[in-house]
Length: 580
Image (tube, rainbow, N blue to C red):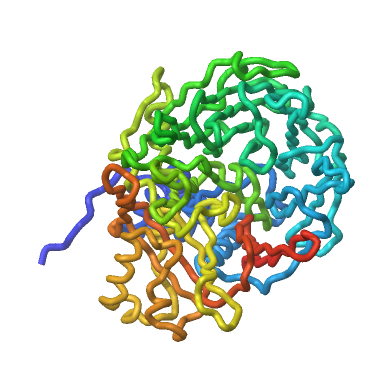
């Protein structure tokens, strides 16, 4: 028999050390393919801790924050901590929960970087709105800090790594004007790095009162982005500033439409917008804008109509609606955490430098009966941000906006789900590529409910197969597969993540996992001119009968948090921390 020999490669004459240096310029999947070619290449990867750390960081969409490593944070330790973090999510391995209760009457709240922030009024009887913040650390039992701010406000967003909080309030004497303040989270005073810590913005429409999805605020590095909207009358302005210099960087506005935004990275903004026609909001598009443009204007007063609207680099088309439907004015898009913020801290701080997943909530209403009814279509859509990056690299320098048709990008980059009702906009946020859901409709005499975490990051989905305690036969039975295909195809995967739970009843493993690859599509037929197919792969892991009933659930870093109201409008948090 003839001996099989491998053809020589360009690497054969290079030392292992040089090959390792070259591989550090490669993507994780290229490194894994290289290591699978022969024994020598396999050993090169196996023997290089730095290269294995590179693979794990890249595969999980993570980076190490510069300057955050402790003295004992060597590569071996960092790799071990990262693998424990990864495996804890894969197996939903959580510590025993702890409880935290706020002792302030909450007006607004945020979960950011391990902090639960409650905005409250120091003089509630006057009804002027919040003027203080209580900061509760999720991992600490110490008494929460309280910050008194120089003014009442109607919306806020903090950035604790920059000791920064942005405040917004409307002007009662001018309903088209708002004030933005840039304050310190340590003193409550104007932030020392802000050249112009107080400025006003004038828009061309009446600004509704708080609580009507009027404001969205985000901060990334030195960029502040604010959205001001009157969703009932289809008006919005989105403006971005360099909060340190006070320079206006970008304006996105609409004469008639609804929109929401999220941050792709520290240089690009993603916009989901719906333009109106004579029947209402009907044309959905997803666009990417540059935030790294030259400044437009500086000063303490900004009149939105004086500035031209920015041109999107890319516009990704969505499917066309059925002629009998329009989009509800409540359109929400989120991506959390903000790119560059710490999500996990041990011997170093880990972050996502780019958003991994955009989560969209929108509903379609019959034009003939605009109020929500049985013919309404409630959607939850997940977009893989990493699937959009190749388009950005290819077309970033084009002079005109490049339009990508739905049939080119949409099916592989998105996964669509149907919901039973219009979801409250603040619940079940996505963190990184993960989405938390609790099935509280189950018959649970124990008072405990199923906790599920969905992961929409393709490398995670394809690297790890189910490892639950159910037998292979049960998981792969023809009945199981048919039920799974039916659930996924109909878009019911968020509310019924596993047919195994209904099939096996009380005979459940403590952990149930499933992988839905791109060969199992979801097809949404109702509400669009033609059926909408989506194939973004995802992985779901569930702990049956694991958590108590809570009003809201969310993910923040390495925590899963359940929220309940308690007497006197206080909030009680049930905090589950990853076992790392």
